[in-house]
Image 1 (cartoon, rainbow, N blue to C red):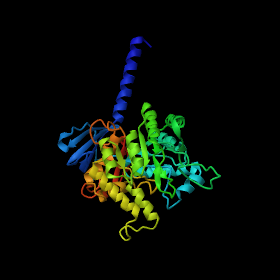
Image 2: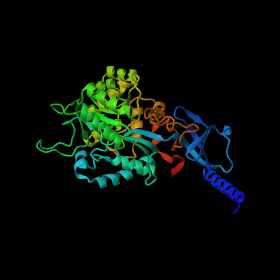
Image 3: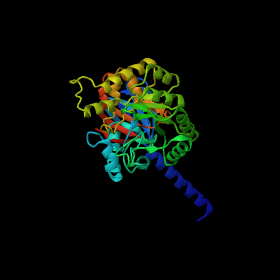
Image 4: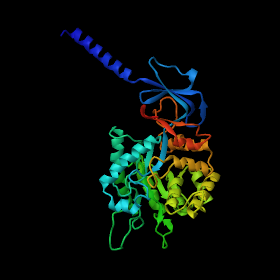
Length: 424
């Protein structure tokens, strides 16, 4: 073949390949009743998707449509950014099915992983396209493999941010048995400078996106919650993780455990049932977000026999209400984190609904589950809002969740990175 002909053939082939790739990136116009863009609700908006990203969003007449655009009508539905749950445990299942201790000690890793595949699918079908998974609870680094399986398209699920094994102080965590036996634990033990540095680095090296540490636990003389690490140890964890670009998150229910984590520089506090107004104000001043995990607290109360709406409110639920009121008064950033795994995966929206029940306006609760959570995860340039350039993570629900937050459980359409996973 002559050189000139060879060049021309190569050019034509390249043009064909490029044109084919462009043709595959077809445009989809989503036409719902209303659009919540991560901040506000808009009537008569449409959203144009090309490939994996949002190409345009705005009033129907203001969006230019490429030739061949396919329209998807979402009648009587509200379109939202893909929902985000900042506190899940994919390797756990509800405690009224199997106790936490039996899951950690008796269930094979293969069984737990297989079950987690179903948990991931249920979570995605419920409209949650991103989760922060805060500990495998004895299942090692299985969350890292699950994350990779989702990323590679092997299984359907939300994108995962993994915390792997989590870190606890020696003697504080469970399961516990006779003192002469060292049982497998639900997290990794570490104490003092050398051990904490080693374990933090080890978990990051094996795939941790966030470093989680238990700043307190139920290990007081009578089983009460008490701090587990000194302020100096917590600061060391933050310095070590931050040097490698990892944010840190604290399990903390006691006021002192919360206070130490805030002073140490943790980015989110989980649970916080006994936080004082002073500590919540300190969190607001230092821009530390709070995941109240209301749904898990109420689930555990139900497992102990509480019948909501019929029985008197248990003390733990009362404490949750008190803490939530204090956080609202202090102006703390509240994120949407459910602790799914304690209760059924796929019921994640229960947390958002409870936040409204506890006093958060519905619009703010929707922001917590989208744009606020995205900012907390340092992913606001990719997810959490409906605007051009962001990933096309989009969910449609029947009705208007600003007027009735319960609409979040009426999911009719789920798209993640431009791919439709559910369309009822």
